[in-house]
Amino acid sequence: MIELLLLIFGALIWYVCTLAAGGGALLLVPVISFLVGPHLVAPTVTIAKCLASPYRALVFWSYIDWRVIRWLTPGSLVGAVLGAYTYTQMAPEWIQIVVGLFLISTIFQYRFGNREKSFPMTLPFFLPLGLVTAFASGLIGAIGPLKNPFLLNYGVEKESLIATKAFNGQLMQIAKLGTYITFSAIPLELVVYGVAAGLGGIIGVTLAKKKLHQVSFKRFRKYTILVMFVCGLALVIRAIYDMVSEGAG
Image (cartoon, rainbow, N blue to C red; front, top):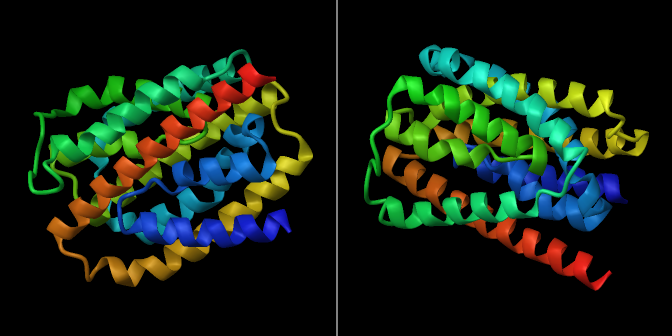
């Protein structure tokens, strides 16, 4: 029953979030937290993304911005390993709150989607961005929307934004998965849960591919900002819930 629910939610969430430049894995966080437990979220999401991300990268391969990839990937690989290792050693609630508040703020930074850019962004800044976002992802399980404001401000839009993030994300997920396995953070049951959610993600991406071409740049930006806002709320609410639960226990 849990596997079927993860398949369905994976398909629905990845469909919506493919139209909004990602966030599918992050929106899965509260779902997985409810179904299998908050302490198993990060490894489960990582397994799911190891299936969904390469498929999405393959679908939109011709749109990848390789200039961004060259700067983003080195920091992402180092940050993924450090974050996944730290996950095995500590609780990440405060990082979730900080990241969540930043994502919530984007709806105001972009004036509800009516502003094209909120701050200047150049290629060299993608190196530390990769390090920070991958580190946070290793702790929380998914943090894809955190890159969106920076990519949008650099001028990466629509299919290019989706493709670039998917390719970079897959390299990051492999590094995280290897670290989780090394430190015995992935029980066998999580593989089944992660595969179910990942297969759902593949279905969602397939259904969303044709729809994306019909979405204008302005509407795409509004979708992206809305998903960042929702993901931010989900992170903050989940972090507060986890802290209250631990306190009550």
